[in-house]
Length: 64
Image 1 (spheres, rainbow, N blue to C red):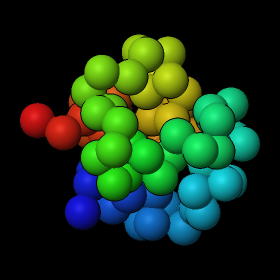
Image 2 (image 1 turned 135 degrees about the vertical axis):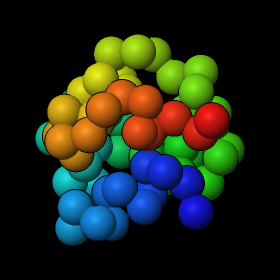
Image 3 (image 1 turned 180 degrees about the vertical axis):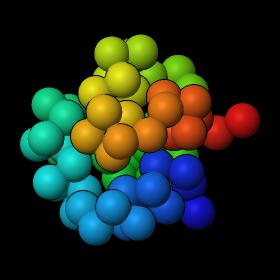
Image 4 (image 1 turned 90 degrees about the vertical axis):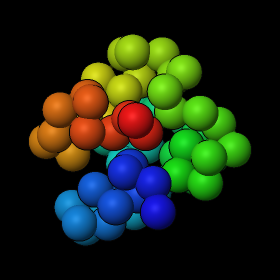
């Protein structure tokens, strides 16, 4: 399970709610969670916005 999915589920947010709150395309959240799109290569502002909504550090969302 991806860090993003684990953190999002722990926060009680759906993929759509996270996307809307972070201003991210709703299609991207499942792609990041499944690994279809590499979150480590995502735009920094995208990761920053998701981290703010989830109240975590940007590094927490990366797959290291």
